[in-house]
Length: 340
Image (cartoon, rainbow, N blue to C red; front, top):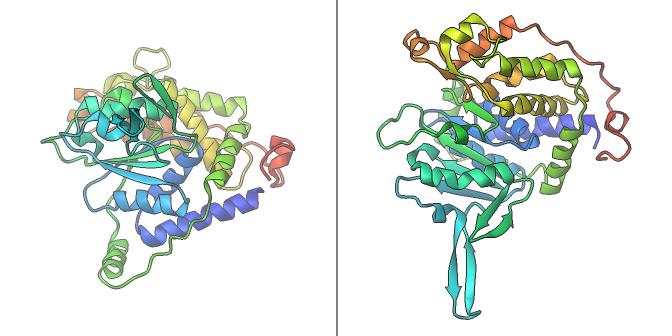
């Protein structure tokens, strides 16, 4: 599969998803980027902004198994992972698998369940495996969690702890659609319609593209550029600028740097390039960093949000340049063993 084919496939995925989920172009783009970078996504938005529809449509276009968990205060870890039940036929305990044994898992309203149940996802998100009663169960490299949460609800919610948030590659703000998009949504959803959700990519093709993303080369100065974003958010480090020390209580950990580079690689491949530029790093900076930096009370009182801090970092960190592009064949950059 050459770069032209990858670029065309990416455009087709976005087109078909956008035909069903209108007004969320940015969210669709970031979900594709996270998928090929083997990351998980947290969608944050008010009710009615098509977060659940986006995840379901996404899985159908990719010909992947899909499962949904509606998180509630009484949900237990066993409801997610599964339970060993004694079988009289085999005279042994048999695992009844929970919904986590899938490829794309929609964790709907993840902040409506207590931390004990939220933690049931930690091993799966980090290791892509589940351990039940001492037995290891592999979930496969294509396993992806798409979680949703409502930012305006407070009663009956349990904010995700930082360790759980850090497992998500991106936090995507799902915004209200603009007036034209909302008009189109009303017209489309209040009449008879057919949805174009035929699969575009198979699971095997996705795994090959994920492997391809990992093997895309990145120059040292682009990696150092990504590292600058992370290190400058840490209040205790000498690299932190004055506005960071004034506004932040805590900065991002090493996963932020890893995801900035991986996100840049995936974005480059989806755009049909075999090089990563500073523009790719800047494009994923907000979704990678916004849930990993914590504003202090003073910043919140002034209306300073993580996005404001990230914008200021983008302005103050010297931009990394572009690398020289190849002529469009992956094998020239990745070697003859690359996906064809």
